[in-house]
Image 1 (cartoon, one colour):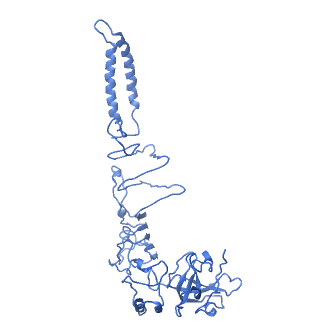
Image 2 (tube, helix red, strand yellow; image 1 turned 90 degrees about the vertical axis):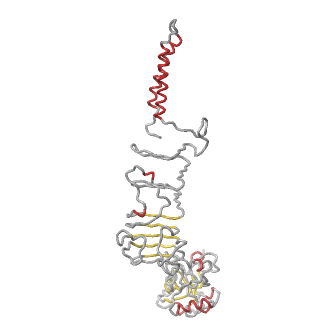
Image 3 (cartoon, one colour; image 1 turned 180 degrees about the horizontal axis):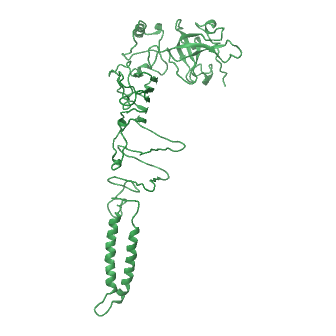
Length: 437
C-alpha cells in the first residue's frame, strides 16, 4: 500500500517554501490556476501521489506568474479540502488554495499543505469558469478574454472555443446547456451537463412565472431532480441564447423526478385512458388537476427492479396500470389475485384468451375454443332432460296393442331415475364466482 502523505517536498517553480507555509501552522490563502488533475490510475503521477488516495489532486500555477511548461513536476500539488463533496475543477479553472494542517501536524505543529475549494465562479456559469493565461491563447480567444477583462460578459456564440479544459471535457458539447433561473429562497445544485436539483417552493405572482406555481400556497416546498434538458430547450426569453436561464419542463426534459406538496404539475401522460373505472364511484385525478403532495417520475423509460426482495405497490384507493399497447405479466411460478370475500375481478375486452395467447379457433378440435354461458347451457340441458323424461314415461307404459312391451316398460323407470339425477346436478354446474357475457 502506498505511503500517502500530503507533503510539499516537490514544490518547485514560482512558489517558495516561505510563501507556501507559515510559522503559525497554516491559514494563508491564494488564488491559483489548475493545470492538471489526477482522476484515475492512468495519470503519470498516480503512484507518486498516493495512488487511489490521491484522486482529486491538482497541479497548479500562480495566476500572477504562470509557468509556461508542460512538465507536471514543475507544478505544485494541491488537495481537495472537502471530503464528502467531490467537485473537482477543470483545467484552467481558478481555485482558492488554503495552507492548512496536514498529516505531519503531530510531529511538526507548523506542517501545512495546500488544500483547494471548488472553482471560483468567474463567469457565473455552471458549465465552466476557466480563465487561461492570455499568453497561451490563440488570437481569436485572446480577443474573447481580453474583452471580458475589460468588462464585457463572456458569451460564446461561434461554437469555436479551443480552451484546454481537460482530456474529455469539451465546451463545444455543452454550449447549448442553459443555467436554471432561481427564485427567492431556492437552493439549486447544477451539474455541467444539464443535470440539476432544485430545492424550491411555490412562488405566487413571480415576475417570471414558472409551471409549478399556478396553484398552491406560497412557500410550499418543492423538489425537482432533472437529468438532461430538452433537445429543443429555450430560455425564459424564449430564444436560444444559452447564457440566459431557463426553467425545468417535466414534459420535455429527458428525465425528471418531482416531489410536490401543494403544486399542480402539468404532466402529459402517454395515455389518459381510464375506461376501466367506468361505473366506479371515483377515478384518479390526472396530474395537472391534482394539487396535493405527490411524486412524479417522467422519462423515456422506467425500470423498477428489486434484486433481492419484493416490489410493493400499495394505494389507499386504486392502482391504475395503463398502456397504449399492452400490459404483460410474466412469472416462473404463479399469479395470485385476492379481492377478499366481497370483491370482484372484471375483465372487459372484445376477446379474452385463457391458456394460450394465440392459435386456431372457431371449429371442433381448434386450439382455442369458446367458453359457454352457464345459465343458457343449463336451460338447454333442462329442455333435453325434460324431453328424455317424457320419453321415459312413454316407455314405462309402452303398449303394442296386444299388451305391454316388457323391455320398454322395464327401461322406462330406469331412464326416469337417471334424468332426475341429472336435473338435480344442473344446480351445481354454475360457478358462484366467475361470470361472463
